[in-house]
Amino acid sequence: MIEFDRKAARTAGLGLLAWYEANKRDLPWRRLRDPYAIWVSETMLQQTRVETVIPYWERWLTLFPTVEALAQALESDVLKAWEGLGYYSRARNLQKAAQAVCERHAGVVPDTLDEMRALPGVGPYTAGAVLSIAYDRDVPAVDGNVFRVLSRLFLIEEDIMKPKSRKTFESIAAYMIPEGRAASFNQGLMELGATVCIPKNPRCHNCPVQETCMAFAEGVQEEFPVKEKKKPPRPVDMTAALLRDGDQLLIRRRPDTGLLAGLWEFPGGERAEGETLEQALVRHLQEAHGITVQPESLFATVEHTFSHLHWTMRVYDCAIVEGTVRVSEDVRWVPVDKLEDYAFPVAHGKIVKQLGGLL
DNA sequence: AAAACGGGGAG
DNA sequence: CTCCCAGTTTT
Image 1 (cartoon, rainbow, N blue to C red):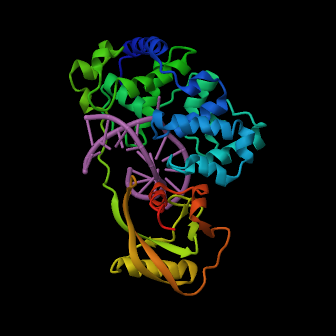
Image 2: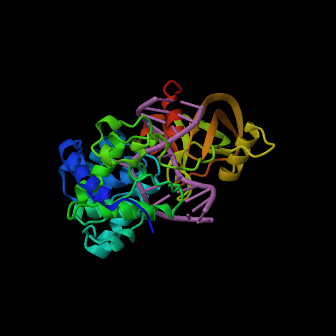
Image 3: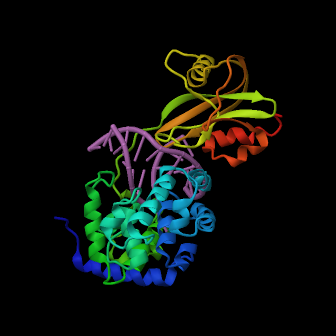
């Protein structure tokens, strides 16, 4: 099984709890006990910093104050409210989950691990976080901060990138929970990781559990957690077309699955092997919209890095030399000053920003 | 087990 | 520039 110092774990659990109660940050979702509001905050906080989330969370609770409101909202409004937060499946899943909660649980966020886990977008972390914080259940909530803090406290050398190591950390975290106090303990563990036990240059001098930290005792806190290196983003040459009709520009909605699902963009696509950028653009517009275009001038170059790929997107001012665009629900001519009504990924939003003096 | 899935902030 | 963050889903 897992080896760790049980006595040290209990001591650290209590120390962390006391430290959190005395030092917790005043975050807006900590002022409420509404399970829905907490669930929304936990979903937004996935891979996203607190400071980034706060304004989104406040706007979200105004737009969609209840599970019912979210369930009944237009998906386009949901995506617009999420615009810029990234990982858009979180927003789509959150709405689907809200609809499931209305159908299966009469609009009440479930209070059991199994029922929470059954909702789309709710994994082991979010289920544990909502159950402990909103319903005071003594279950662990293990995120990146917890991996880091516990790996240092107990000198755990397992690679945190491997799925199986989650169980190790959940077991330790579960053991450390002071009975009935998981809400504060779990948040304390994460708070310590976010403010003191940080990845680089951890502030061990004002750590409440320095006494029981094995990594600090050996001066190796910077070496933890053990994490395998991930591959660099793959470079992709992307093209996009500015097609004009009077004061209007052509935009289209991306497919419901895959990268940036459901967001709007300027038409174009990846350059294939052995193709020039202009050839790629002409091919994509022909294939997708049945028109032949002529790239006339380079309007802008936009760089954007995702976790797994890097776009260099060339945006061309184009003329349609043959055919007519078939408009639909997902392909529209939109006046420049109405573009802000649509949810764009950041890369295409950069294009919108540069459109100012165009028309 | 590995890859896909965004975006921004810190050093 | 590199690394990393209150992760989940799909392959």
